Length: 374
Image (tube, rainbow, N blue to C red; front, side):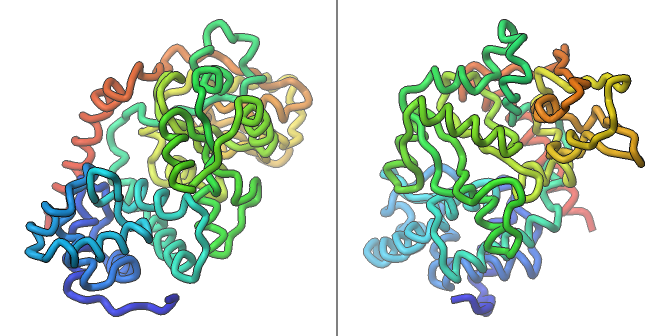
């Protein structure tokens, strides 16, 4: 199953679908064609052409659109759903974007096979082309960093909505995914994580936790267990990223690193910072106390700290306000300072969607116009 498969006409047509700007897709290329031919058989690709984006459609509607007997369509759809290359719910079936979307859905249960390993190599190579930078043109507070609690807890009056403790207290149901999809894919590509293990999966809250546990993609944990997991992840110098929502909302928290995680990769290399909410706090350096030891450089995931010879250099435009450097600094030369320009979390998923929709549409249209030019 690890062999390169020939590209058929159905694969070429489906590659055009996945390249859609409304799926935040890459332009059609040999890499995309190779990925699609790996994910779908020709017959599956022909049927997948008739699937909707995001919102599932019933088996009968899909079969009618594809002019295929429902039983034949069901067998193909269920085979694709079992491999998690399409979304399957009680309402029906749908396509997901390659990343984010299918990438997380396909790998989150921790499956390991030659097919999964080749998929990881192909999707990582496609992501490394930097195509997502085209969608990073309009500032939009999609993702927020949740800062290290000890770095800002002296200011707890004003940061209550920003902290993991508030999120844990707000939910009865919480879970941990079996694996981190980014670390899994990098391991499959021959680059194991330097900060954490593959089993350090995302933290999931509310109905999201119930659904991933029911699907076998994660395990439920207690509040006490979640607090312990959070402390452990911070000790590993991981960055906590979540949708920019108030803690009471269902959500998922990725615990990211600079060596594996695609979102941190996009921030560092592909303009992904425009989708990062301006943080509530930013690091402030007292250079008079700094000894140039470099400990902050080692823990920073976004290259905000550096060394020039034996002198510390700080790049404030790269700081995301995680606070890991505060804990690392033995000289207490770093503190967290409130950012008056921060983007507060949205009240609900509805308000979140309305808030980020304009920038998403404008960025997609810009990519569409750019591709249409000769």
